[in-house]
Amino acid sequence: IIQLSLSHGMSPVSPIGFVHLGSYIAKLGDISEGYRYVKLARSLIDRVGSTESADEVISIGTQVRAYIEPLQAAFEYHNEGYAVSMASGDIIQAALNLVLICSSSLSAGVNLQSMREKSDEVTNFLYERKMLIFVVQMQCFQHCVLKLIGADEKPAYVSAEEVCNILATNSSVTAVYFFQKAYVSFMFRSYDDMVENIEKYFAFQETTWACLFFAHAVHAFYTGLISFWVARKSSDRQQWHERGEQSKLALKKWAESSRWTFEHKWYLLEAEESYYYNDFEVAELFYEKAISSAKEHKFVHEEALACELAGYFYAELRDTKKAMEHFLRAHKKYHEWGAFGKCDCLFKFVERILSLR
Image 1 (cartoon, rainbow, N blue to C red):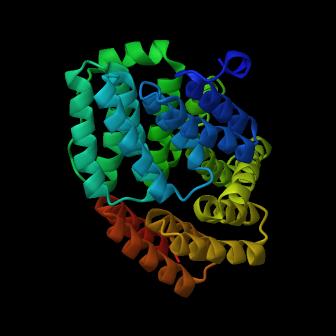
Image 2 (cartoon, rainbow, N blue to C red):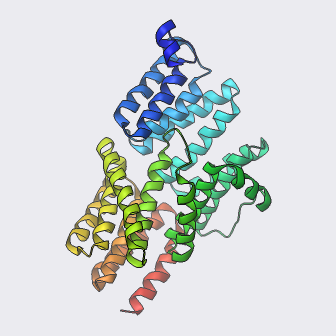
Image 3 (cartoon, rainbow, N blue to C red):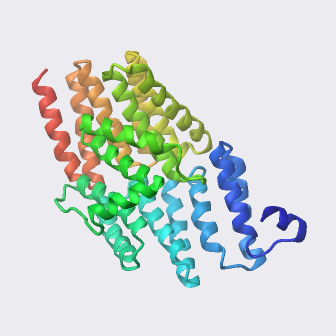
């Protein structure tokens, strides 16, 4: 498409070629150059007068924008993409934009009750149109949100047999499925389930998505945190540490493109790695920097997470006063996020940890 556009002039499909090129370049590691092509694709929509390609340009381009622009603003572009898709009758792109709105909202720390309502709306939209692959992804998302809220509901739009059939034929959905299960296990400190599911995720990780999605960064962040935790407990320390370090280096590079979205994530991985090395002074410094950065950039859920992990760190050092200060702040921020189920879990863990001190 690009070669034809350069040789014969721009056409209504030229923006699609440029946005996919930008996404691919960004995935290879050059975020700034990829972002440049994404902006070019967006500007071409108006120049060539094409509305038919606008929805795809917005859905793919927004995912690259999230590596440069503040994440909390990025998912607003997906609302535009959804509206354009519905106007042009492109239900696939409409569905993609809706799913990406939900995933971006969770990553941005939007209130969980609002996400619960939005995910119900989106899943019903998808189910009514029998878009089962998207439904399975949203069902995983809903389970995660409901678990964090503390609700007993278990979404079951798609049967267990249908889920298995989709997982057997779609590696991208399979990776998302096991990542979400590992994420929930991590958030609720279910160590054995977490390790089992993250190992299954790693088996499919390399076969997913030719384009760059913000999910790549989310997966890198949480697999890094998981890996450093496992490295501290596992006999296979080197392999898990290498996985964690790989994630840390990726987040450090992305933080160069967007301090707003990635700085606190990088700092938290630095803290966890320093904890792994028993370099407690450096670990303490990075925990506090992660907490401060997450607060500054309005990631309430990850401010809570940084406080929680710092609490476990201080508890291990038998500094009960600092541990309690951080656990209480984590509880407050999780509550602010709407993660009442997580608050209950944290309270029980803290009660058990402190009873052993």
